[in-house]
Figure (cartoon, rainbow, N blue to C red):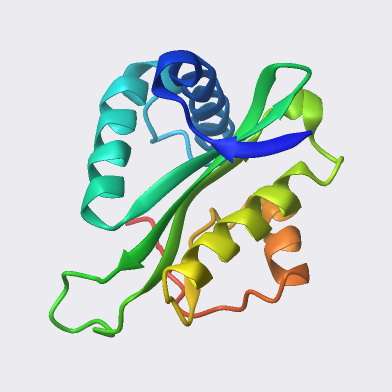
Length: 157
């Protein structure tokens, strides 16, 4: 298994499929979310735009010449909200491993590669978000030293 930088000529369709799989998994946790196929192209275009804006990179996990997951890391992210912490930091908006390849340490290796990129760019901290119901991802992140920084709560009205 190799972790390498995204190649737009050969990897876009593969990460599109990974994104759709993640989005549809998260849609099972929250049915209000749109389907992955419905938003994939728009989302990926925005993801690459934000990579340019925040010195980001997409890294793919490749196994047997097939992309089996990816991570996006913005190495110089700063919130635009006036009441947020103004400190520049690393941010991971996406980390996904295809279901058929989970449980092999690929997510952990992608996470480590993203952290290394952020560290190399001078980030002193790195943040990410995860759906509350995604127990496997939350377990991975906790095992890797991530802790709660902010929690969003919701109540049906």
